[in-house]
Image (cartoon, rainbow, N blue to C red; front, side, top):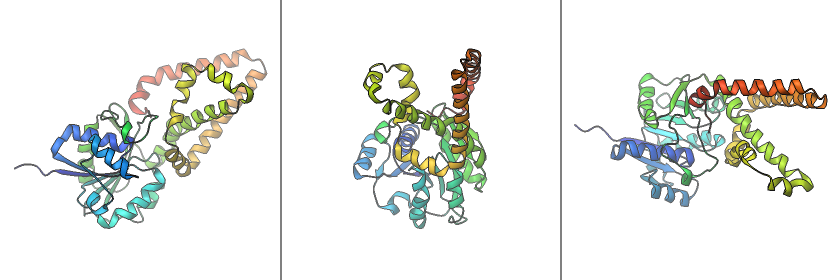
Length: 298
């Protein structure tokens, strides 16, 4: 007897959703049928042309009605409204999972509206590129990247096992965290670095008469440290709105660190500056391999 075909719906077939679709079609072929919903008709057409989905359209019943798993990958603030919209079309036992960079905000809202026979398993693939849209999708985007699964949203073991049997095909390194710790850690290793990269670009923007001369000097250091500033602005605005306490706490801590460096420079305290660079280099070098496996956000 042939096994039943898996039905997957991807809401937001962009970089992350599109990469998942490409990966699963590559691994499962005709054993999976993927439907999708994108912002524009052009994006939906492109998603089908690239093979990230079998069908993309605006008919919600056709997109999610038969879905065993619904992968939600729009900007964070659009996830809850989207679930509210598709909820009437979902079949009993459907599994909702997401790629949202913040988790507490989503779960606080979803737990008030989900019926007991629709399951939510919070997820966060810690991967990405500075490019966005389905045209930037890659089937190997998740390989060896950290993928956080939050297990405290009440889904039964059968639902968890079913979802993980699919997600493991991505080649990601899976780890589990509780919701609050996820949001705090994501702020440190993903959210604040993106804000800092954008701040460095803003510093260049505000360099006044020196701006054009500065641009001529741009090399690897500036490019490497600001690469992620080219990420999707809509997504990052939503992240800041939904993980505010953790992000602001970490930014204030970063502000204190920069303040300490400013003081050391003003005091011509070379030893303090030397110790600052030495300590950061030693820590980075010691954790780099482990961090790449567990929490590489890009």
